[in-house]
Length: 168
Image (cartoon, one colour):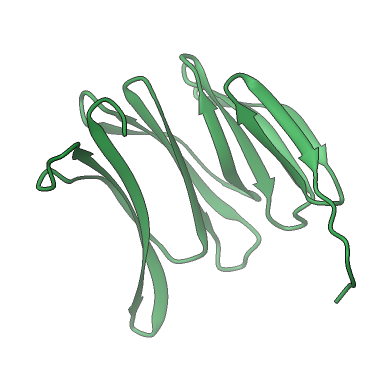
């Protein structure tokens, strides 16, 4: 809920011609008015996908990552939905080896945690500059025990995760 609107997202599974896929949708609805649902974005996704979105002021930032069929790369897209104008802007798009798993934003940029998909032992903490539309790496975590971390307001917290038990 933000400034009189409810925002929600959903992945809906579908099967067409024997192939399964998903549709990702992000919606906006005026609080208390069930007949005012507006579709902000809808994307067909054929592989495993992950989305993350946050609201900062009059902007909603959305990351959408889709795993390629070879499971070796992810098509990542970063969007900005301008709440007042209703405009959806693509900020960045690239094929990478990571999913974007967390975000925080301020007036000049977006901080993101990116989790590497192949070995699952690296996380990248990056900052996307809204003016230059460029990505800058802040920190690389190489933890053989599956790194994890998060952003909390303007602070970065990082920790390693260790699993115990029998192998296999």
